[in-house]
Amino acid sequence: MQDVQFFDSKSGDKTCSINSIRLHSSYDPVKEAQRYVSSLDINFVPSLIVVTEPALSYCACFLRKRFPKTILVAIRFSNLFDDYNSLWDKVFYYDEVDSLLNIYGEDLLLVTGFFSWQPAQQVFPDEYISCWNKIRTLLQTGRDILATRAYFAKRWLKNTLLFCFRLSSASLIKNGTFPVLLVASGPSLESSIEHIKKHRKSIFVIALSSALPPLLDRKITPDLCISTDGGYWAKKHIEKCPVPIALPAEAAVPSTLFNQTIIPLEYGDGPETNLLKFCRIPFMKALRNGTVSGTALEFALSITSGPVFACGLDLSSTVGFQHCQPNSIEINNENKDFRLITKETRLFPQELPSHSLEIYAQWFASQSKRFKDRFYRLSHCNYKFSNTLGEIKDINWNDFEKILQEYNKNHNDFSFPSLVEKKLQRKEERYTILLNTLTKYKELGLPEHWLESIFPAEQVLLSRSIDKEELQIKIKNKEKIFLEEMIDYLKSIWENGHDDI
Image 1 (cartoon, rainbow, N blue to C red):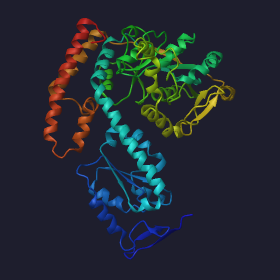
Image 2 (cartoon, rainbow, N blue to C red):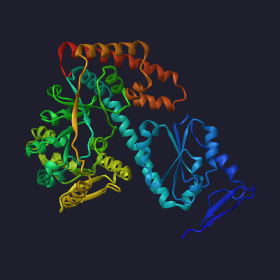
Image 3 (cartoon, rainbow, N blue to C red):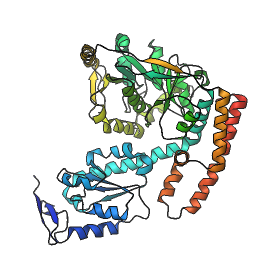
Image 4 (tube, one colour):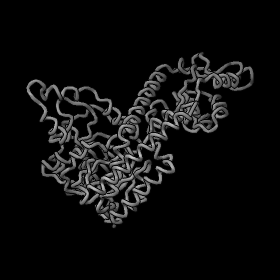
């Protein structure tokens, strides 16, 4: 039981203590807060400042004076001080720290000052440790995402140029009220195959790219496939895709798919948005996510008002194969197995805890309040997931039938989606638009959001740098070399028609 006391300080301003530990000065808490803010060691202008449990929040006004353009965020360890939340731009509780990445993104997160109101550490030691462990994990995740973006930036823009040029037709989905089943390729998918077959006619099935081969192998044809990965290996899963496929422009696309039904997706945060619009290619909105399952869920929820289910969404390491078989990448890898380096030796590292899978599971958990009323994770009655996804319910196929029956009973206007095909400009016209755009940017410089997408690490360094001039010159040189390479690549597509250059 906490003994909480609020009382007037010697200066007349309110102060407080918990269990006889003072959270603010008993003499002058305002002066104390001013000294605290002045002492913060930060030599750049942060995009955000996060303070863990600032209690009565006297520091907020001094932070705002020192950093007038910075977003101020408090992380509460308790609801005792909610009356002071209005002094902050945003307030989270310590178990909601994961939301920082989802709301502000890794770019802002890595230009953030994180600080602790130190007296709160003594009063809330467990909450403090939990919160700062989450912050450390969050920053590592942000750095990992930034490194991935920096590594793949060139590949993603090449994919986008190829997509905008080679696309033969574009279709959009007309929304409906139908229930959706997302099929991921986790090992638990095997236990759901017969149930998918049983209910196939009453659900709209969206296959994540790696789940397409095991579904087709078991004679299940989904209604739609979705792929978001920009790496060349991602094409292996969808080389033989017999159904419409939803793709962002930056995704890796086999040449065989460009003449099929494609639903362009657009994230709204990079060069692909401009290039799609310049080429007048219609698209559907999507949300960028570290995993295709996250993007697919947001997309599914956007195209139906009905419930959304997912099977094969394990998001954890298991013994043996990490994906339901057959898996296109596994087929390629097993060709390299031999007596001295066996399949068991190759698979064992995959059985260890996976940082990436933990990040994906944390994302679902952090968003679970948004999803819990319309999204369910499915498995066979005898299968138990090794993790939980926050407030998202894990159900079996008996529960699925009950939810579906109840939904159908209350929705007489039940409708499946339809595809609307859109006409495109001729390829020659799109090529000219793309070439002129790259040439113009080579002469005038890239827009800010292109720089953030193509050179994310450099932009973060620039934001944190005191002497920016030298770094700006380096970025300018990189920018010119990058655009020259993209122009050469685009010309090679035009001249040769290759998709893997």
